[in-house]
Each structure stands twice: as structure tokens, then as C-alpha cells.
Length: 289
Ligand code: ATP
Ligand code: MG
Image 1: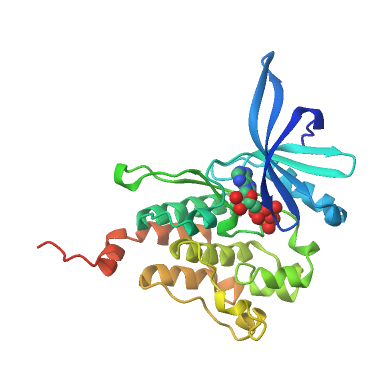
Image 2: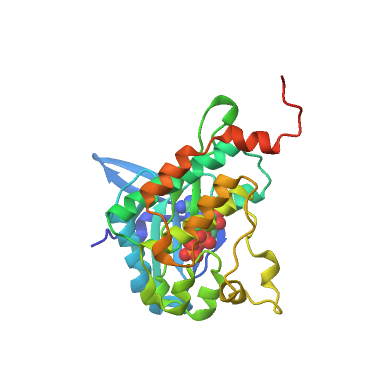
């Protein structure tokens, strides 16, 4: 059910760090198309040896991504197996993860952020129509393919990355670590994983984007205040000053899963947000009369 790529056709380049269960490299793939040899930039995700028992779930994630196609979903070319190595071969996205991009201090406009939210909502709507739960939506898993430039009216362009190892396979500590992106009901049982869980994660991700990639629960990483306390006491993320945006995030992050909005409703709400409202709220410059 998925394309396998010959290990010999892969070339490994620089390391890009580690994921939760993976080592990540830039690389190249050679293949023959129309009788010609092509060399494509790729991203190689190698499953850590200590998690090799999860390879089926890892490959399932690859298979899922290669079976569906949407402009805001990352392309997965296939998988490659070499001895003990399990590798996912995917599209290389130029500007990398969105959280890091924003944390680097790039200033982007509100309409830029709103565009990102709309693009993610359209990917989510596509998944919802296909009845596919992603399960790992967060700013780290949004990859930036085009920076865009608000002054020239060019939008950014994002792609949602693969979900990786299924939530059902993950240990409790990994799930706790995914607070506030993972929906609270999933911590009770991974059988509670539904389309509604992605709505919760969407809310947390939009929060991150509008807060420049900052971690939503900074203060909760301390031992004295375990993250799980956040859910146990039904906390909410600090609301945006932009009331309409705060409403949308709150609606998505409703502790009661069936109160969360449908994607159509999310898209409608996003489309009704007028950036100038926000800009007036935050402008420090006197408004011209
Ligand atoms: P998880 O399953 O938790 O998402 P992962 O294995 O996908 O883990 P990440 O932490 O999401 O790993 O990604 C690690 C880093 O690799 C990101 O910060 C990003 O910079 C880079 N990266 C991941 N995928 C791509 C890609 N397709 N193109 C370019 N860079 C990527
Ligand atoms: Mg990822």
C-alpha cells in the first residue's frame, strides 16, 4: 500500500536534528522519470532503533500521507528499508517548521498568520471530509514552503506534516508532553481519538501561530506544576486580545468534544475575521483622521 524506495537511490546530507522518535536529514533521491535521471531534494526521517517496534505505525503514517493529496498536506514519496533502518522519504520543505520560523523572530503580519490558519483549516476540512484523523497537529508539524510577503500581497504557504507514530502506541509521558495540543479526552483513552480531537489541536496551533511560536504552557514545564494539572483543572490558554479570534480558539478547545465546531464552521469564522480590527487594537501609531 505504499511505495518503496531503494536505499541505493538515496543520498544522505546534513542532519536536521531529531523528532520525537526519529532522526532527520536532508537528502537526495535519484529516480528515472521519462527515461531521464532526476535528482530530487528530499527529507529523510529515520525511525530511531529503540522505537523500531513502532515501525508499522510509522509506515502507516507514511502510507496515509501518500494516499491522500491536498496542496496543504505534505507529500510523502515512500518508505525505504535497509537492514534495521526504517526511513520515510518525504518532500523537503524549504523554510522548515513554522514554530521555529516564528521563534527566530521573523516579524509577520496578522494577515500572514490568518492565512496560515485558513490554509490549515482547509487541510483539516479535507481530512474531515475523508473521515481521517491526523492526531498530531501543532505548529512544529506545519512546514513553511513559501515565506510570502505581506507588503507585496504574497501569502505564506504551509504544508501539514505526517502525524508520525499513532497516539494509540504512545506512552503516557509522551501524551502528557503533548498537552495542550493533544485533546484532553485522548489522555483518558486513545479510543477517544476522533475528528474532534484535531479541532482541539487546531485551536492550540492557531494560538501558537498568533503567539509567534511560543510554547503555550511555558510555566507548566516545572516539576511543581505538572502539565496534566492544566487539563485536570479545565484551564484555557491565555486569550488573545482579539476577541473574535479568542472565541474561535476557545470554541475549538472545548473540553466537551461534541461542542467543537465543524471545519465548515471554522472556515466561516476565519473568513469573518477582519484583520484591520486587530490592527486597530494593537496599533501604537495615531490613527490618521
Ligand atoms: P513528530 O512525529 O513528533 O512530529 P518528527 O519525526 O516529525 O516528530 P519533528 O520534530 O516534527 O520530527 O521535525 C523535526 C525538525 O525537522 C523540524 O523542526 C523541521 O525543522 C524539520 N523538518 C521536518 N520535516 C521537514 C520537511 N518535510 N522539510 C524540511 N524540514 C523538515
Ligand atoms: Mg513532525
